[in-house]
Length: 292
Image 1: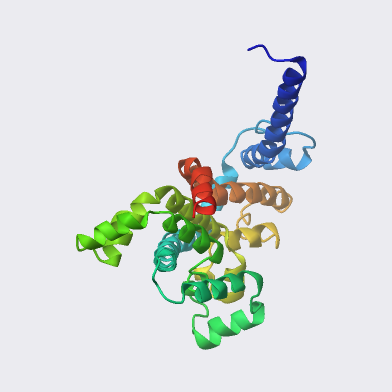
Image 2 (image 1 turned 120 degrees about the horizontal axis):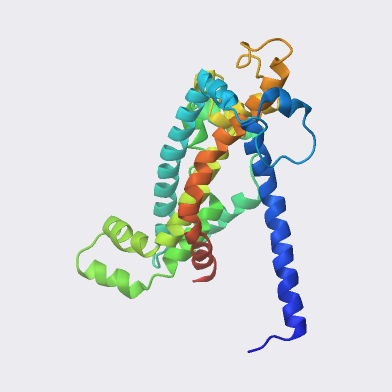
């Protein structure tokens, strides 16, 4: 069917608008990547757009990877992302399953108390005292996992998804002798994989990008995640220990290149993982938020 002039103009405007948004969104990433691969002295004197490296060099990446804090930061971040996501998924799935089943007493009052925490929290100081004085998790990686083991928002999405599974399917499994753990891990979770994939994305990205809790609860630099190291480099401008081999006049220029290279190194792993889970994103959120 031939489109009208108004419809054609609308589609053209949409395409132009989307192209502008793509350029505006992608250019900062391109600028950071090209800057990290550029000659430090040329980069310091460069102004305007940057669409290709200025004398291609990987010197900044070599300096970044020689920094022992980056290596320990990656190790800690990988541990937090892997173990933290497993803990998050396990506890969130168990809580969502219990709260989604009919016949379980006190589910409504419990849900009200859970939702209450979305709007009112104890605040930073009570949380700090709870972690240090009551849970005794201060200066441990567990302090970055246990207090936030269950996200209220994710629990509600997963509970809604679990509740959409027909009761007849659950009852049939019970008649065949299946217990709750068997029903959860062999029936409910396999039928909710799009939502589970979204939970993995939410929790893993959250752990990968987290730095505030680490700044509050950690004292030992050996426990710092890479995002906290990145914060020191970008905000506190602490690149001197990586550019100490450079001449005094070049240290500032090398420091700028190190900042860009560190940003790429810290963000590239999660950008590589994201496309594999992105296809589940819309479907999983829609299932978890609408059904039931």
